[in-house]
Length: 305
Length: 256
Image 1 (cartoon, chains in turn orange, brown):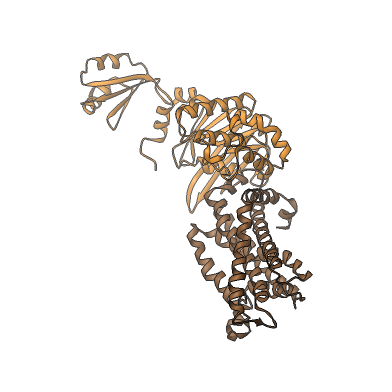
Image 2: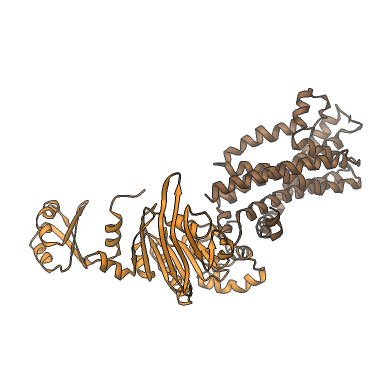
């Protein structure tokens, strides 16, 4: 189908009887940024590996850029760029050599890659570091070099597995800016993340997955509107348990106590906020509902390790 | 394997390793020369006072023929085990390569040929050392260069089976102490095997280093080796069997 760059039907993967991906249907449209959102162990990385043909699905079908995967995965990968979760740059090479050597795996000659190097380095904001050794780069620089390396074959579709995990706020913003640049060039992006701000800023559409299943899918706004009351009041302080058990139940459409905070979800927070102003020992934060609220509602609040 | 060989995608993997080697070539070549030089001078000159001749040739020439085979065996083994494990597991280099349109078989093939190339480089270095010392000096010595490559294929193929199942570098000690060192002692590097008990000779006759030396030593001494093709076939069989098993194990480990 024109406009569809990737689709899966009934994708499943089991390891020793444990189902990691349990019937996933995905469709990526050309030019969009799609985010796979899920807690650790939700099946995000396994899904990416299957999409690239690096592990065979237990069941289901995958079409990547018009090629059946895993049967023709190698051919499809020629038009895909991949930014893996863990940096795997070549520590023995300089920045430039990393790009040239990686280009060879796509059948590009040294001259062909050398011609692209200035643009790739500018995209990665590494213009002055072409001959630097990998060990001398910061975490953010390495991440951007991995991104530049993924672009060496001028891919139509880019896979990013947790692109900003482990980066400081400044480095994350640079990364996001670069990804938006790639989207403006008409490239399609599939990223996995467990950062809500990342998903909200970058993604046109999101799929929330857990235990290998799609829990909800849509634009960030649609998802929040469909699953969460529009306003949230977080209440904390001495006596919050008693307040949660009493007034909160009456004033909020939904109230949950987690640790030392009561989360009150409401369509209209006026009455609740008024009531809280009279509670001297309690403090509160009134805000709009966001993706994190949605995420926690769908995937639960228990720790994942 | 033939298809992957002809497709040539493995060449990118080979070239990557070659480029890294080239960066560190000075140190690597120095090691390739100094190590066998010490062996030849130390053992050769030391033993020569007690054993002037073995099987009708000077001991140092006898030793040199065995040392070349033994050193090329080690060169391929170190590359396939330690360096291969670093690229597969520690640095995740293979993972990066396989995100490009290169398959696991291409990667392993490139690694295999590269490890054998290291044997070739190291074998050539010792030949030059031997010539510089005035040991040997027949045209048949030139055939040791392709032989070194074949020895490399045999030991790298077998070694990659270890790499495919290793959890850490420590595991490789077993391979070196239980598999390679006994071959050094039993297969005729330092002394002729004819004096060993017959059951030891029987075991040794199946081991690849025996077959490597059966070709390498006569070539070094300017003789045409008896049954060269059979010995070469045994080396190739060890290498191919190792490669075939290793591919299966790598697939299980990396693409499950």
